[in-house]
Image 1 (cartoon, one colour):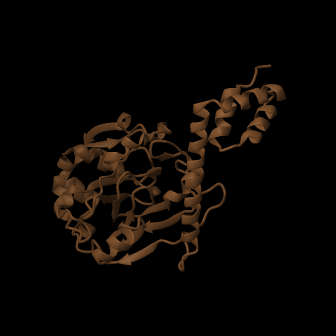
Image 2 (image 1 turned 45 degrees about the vertical axis):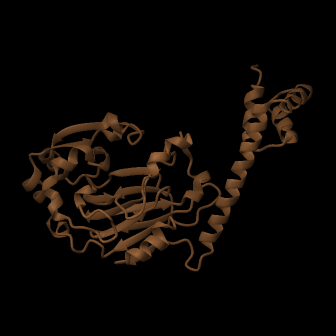
Image 3 (image 1 turned 90 degrees about the horizontal axis):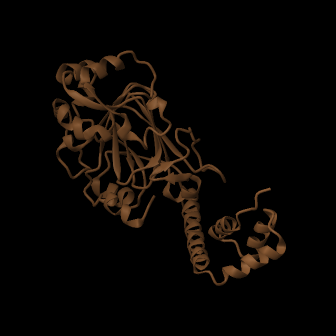
Length: 330
């Protein structure tokens, strides 16, 4: 019978914040003799790495306490844990009570002046940009990590070919034009930007500075958080957006970068429980938008053939991605 890895057991216990008695019990339960467990515990008192692990575990415990208080405040608010809907919000109100507060909101009436709401269709796309070569994410359904491995799914094709594929109106998550493809598509789809107009909440008066999304019903962006604040505007079809707050970090199963192991799971709306995070949920119809604050987890599913725009050009600093790596995040 293989001997238990005592150092691995101790490291797991230290990371969990266990005291000496709990560490001793962990070792004995795994099959280590009481005498050997005593020896290992005594060694920890002289191990600077063990001391550092204990300090780090204490800091994490403090963070959990802070997150628990943020959860309590959110749930005990007068309106409860809910997503506000703002009708043509004044910029000062939006920035003070939502942007600066890291609080999501559904927004209506902010793009009623967009010609795209009446013009955009597959026929319009084909007529004005069908011959353009665009970049799409393809063959996503064969790869459970399609979002993490986005570079492996880049393909170039005529926009008209992509549009013809969409005309079948079949549910699929296999092909999608996303914001990640905008480096190529911003210029290729330039004829579409005249159908947009400035949004009063944003600093950039050039709508072409946004990111274009187009795909069939059934496209899914799995649970993740962005490294910037984002405004997602729906133009064609509907999208279901689920959101979970940063203070639910311990239940979001974050193992790699900004992605959650919940993946495409349809987590239920509500305050959550010991295993599942609290979730806000909304469906965006054409002309509606949602503000997704930096750090908020979200999942997006197209309920219909869908075209959307997203924007990061807010009036306040939004350069959070620049210092992400400096924190040693994995």
